[in-house]
Image (cartoon, rainbow over all chains, first blue to last red; front, top):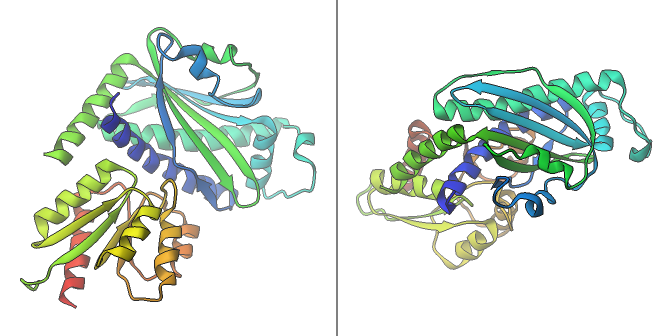
Length: 207
Length: 129
């Protein structure tokens, strides 16, 4: 991926994540501030383990993943540190408490809220990609997992035939900083399609 | 549009692609326009102070200095300015924040030909004032 492809991709992802942030702000009834999304492309053969150390600086995380497929296939994952996920859920439910966030524990019902948040956010982002590619995909329902991962285990996201498009976005709610990570892993042919579409946009812009 | 009008437009966006799309469209549709490009609010403000800028087109979410911070600085000069914001941030809270500035219009990204034409018509109106 060259610099201009990266620039165009970042700009599109900025639009998609802002749409997702707007929806999140409506759910949480909170202003959501985004940082400029960082994107990178990883593969097992290239940056691999060294790069994966920076995937997410937390070991105790909630992962919500959705697979999507058709002409554009892959998996989108939304990750939050567990204690921040609980804070996010509580804000969405209108619960405000004074507890130290390290004492917060996710309850069964909280997973439904996380599932709904990730469903809306990931659909918005992947929907942005499919609109760009003028195609439609089918989604699986979000799968929620509580994970303890270290840097070596994070490599399980990387597979031989898959490229990881890593989107790192911080969501900052008005009263608490909730940092989330979104990763989108694409099959090689899907990534090629995406880059082909981007090349067309670049050609149009620079002609 | 007056034939003799030469407009200096400051286009501020961290994406080279977006700057290029806006610049190309303005160059094609407005005669005698001069575009100055900046990739963040900080360099944009320095440029704004040193150049004779007639119109600002700015993004909001940018590294180094955001569009809001840039507009805060411009607004603080207590001089009239004309600005259109092009942003993907479509939250009501953001729109409310921008009410303190003299923003002609907020154009939501992604930028389409139709939206770029809206931008052009505002700039042409401004030229005729």
